[in-house]
Length: 317
Image (cartoon, rainbow, N blue to C red; front, side, top):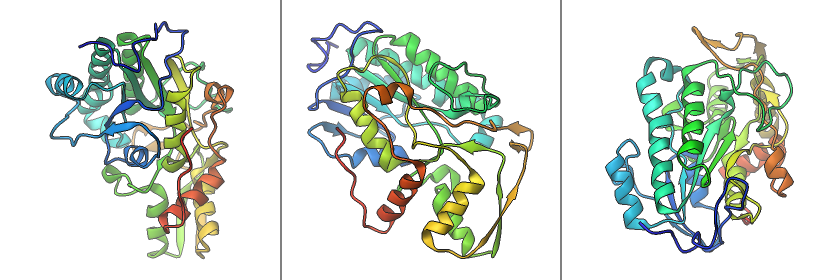
């Protein structure tokens, strides 16, 4: 397959620009997920194709190559993942098949087609021992199968398509589409909890960057259109950090729900599985390009307004 029209003029070394035009054609994978659903809503002049899973199962190399030949995208955005963290421990083969092998195959297909490949990773590639926000240059050290499978996917993307891959790490996603594999997103689940109990225990030992997909999606689109974009790893999260306990308190304070929230320290463990105790991410590279998300408290307010029908996403660039 020949190079796509928006990409043809760029010689994409790892230190050179890979940003493409606003009129790009995008192949979006994972449209039913929280982030995929938010990307579908971002306004712009781009053409977006979002196949259903029966048409494009990313664990099938044949379907990947067929989709690339059919749609000839300038950009492939992969939001699909096996992200049920505890389940990854038992179904590690599935985790690596989706989070690693499929990412490799997509990157290879993009390298052959001359398409930009954008895929997503996680704060769980870090061990949480740093205590200050992680930058893109900090050394990963995952504690569990999920983080290890996502880190392996990062390496494969950047090695299979070194001049055409953009890996975006993010953290604590919640969005209107919900998270079906987890039974809903964090905010909605806490609001449902408040209808059942008067006292809610919430873990207080993990510090994270809760990120609203309605803020993240326009930032992703702005990033890939930025003329200074180069291949590599970027962090994109709502600014600041908090514990899940603090985030839960903010949910109830913002919505006016009267419930007692009690902090509980679980040591970052679910059974034998360990989570990083501190995984706040710093948006250093994107911010230097003029791209930043609002503070997580603003992100929460944005989500609650969209949830009630009073929020409209801004332009992506």
